Image (tube, rainbow, N blue to C red; front, top):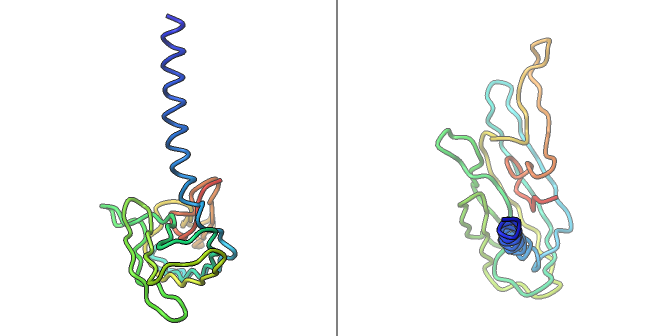
Length: 159
C-alpha cells in the first residue's frame, strides 16, 4: 500500500515537473529589459485603459513573443488588447487562454532589442483591487503577489 502511494506521488511530481518546464520554456527566448505601465483609472466605473511599453532583448532568434494577460471572460472581466506596435510596425497578435501571443513581422536576431507598445482596456478580474475605503472614497490597490499582475498588466507573470 505504501509503495502504491509512493508511485502515485512520484507520477504526480513528474507531471507537474513537465508542466513547469513547459511554462518556463516560454522565457528561454527573451529577457525583459524594462516595463513602463501607463494606467488610466476611472472614478465612475471599474474600466481601466492601459498602455504598456516593454523593452525585450532576444536571447535566441524568435518569430513571436508571449506575455501573460487575462483575456475577457463571460462576465466581461479581463483585458482586451486594442493594438500592439513597434517604432515602425503594427504587429498581429492572438489573445487566448490568458496568453498574449505577438507575431513579429520579421524574425528577431539574438541580442536584438525591441520595444513594444501594447494598448489595452478592460475590467481587472484580480490583481488591481477597486473599491471604497471606510470614508466612501474610491480606492485602487495593486495586489500582484505572487502572480496576479497578469489580470491587469501585460507581462511575464511568474514568481
